[in-house]
Length: 50
Image 1 (spheres, rainbow, N blue to C red):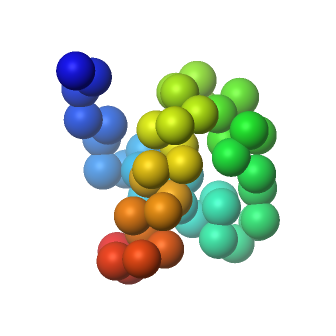
Image 2: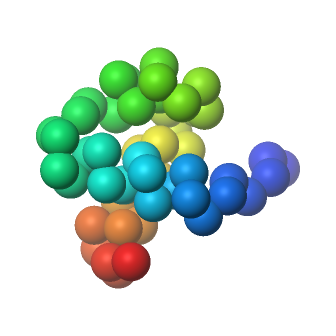
């Protein structure tokens, strides 16, 4: 099982997705974390908010 990502990183990813419309693939490439983790972080913030 992987380690939890820092809150600042999760917020940055969610913010980039929402404000810049960056794709999951681009976020994966920018931050070097798995595609599924990026997708999960974004989905969580989109459904639950901050």
